[in-house]
Amino acid sequence: MIVIPNSIVNKEKIVNFDIGEKKSCEFIDIGISYDSDVDFAKKIMQEECGNHPLIFDNRSAEEKHNNVPVVKTALIGLDDSSVQLRAWAWANSYVDAASLKRDVLESIKKRFDKEGIDIPYPHRTVIIKDTFYKRDKEEQNMKDT
Image (cartoon, rainbow, N blue to C red; front, top):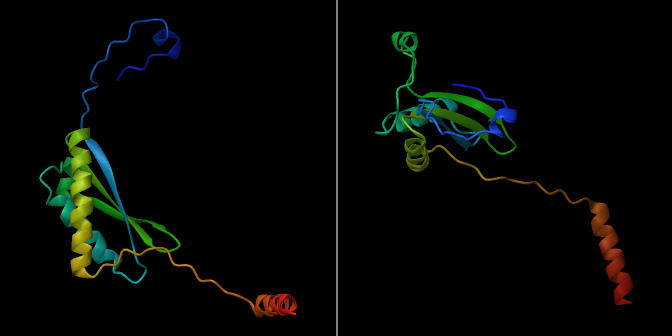
């Protein structure tokens, strides 16, 4: 990789050279309910990504020797309505990575449905205090008279 200062780029012809690194990592982010089994959900994500034909094994020799999974997963956040999980899925190219992500999002969703892993939607609790009821009733009574 060559870094060229902006002052030179602005004055010269630009020749597009391929850096040579074509592999690409997609983040597969999915939120599950707080009641769902995090470890089981991560395992499903690893399996669904790992079984896809476009997955690329980006592990180092040391990682392979230590049996590190091809697809790494982790809990990355605790949101209001969900526990956020991420899988790192590598592909040989940007085009393959986009296809990989699209396909595995669907297969993970279907597998979660089958295995009872819940993907929640936001819930809100609304608390209405008695003082509002009393004021509204008083205003209504005034209008009625």
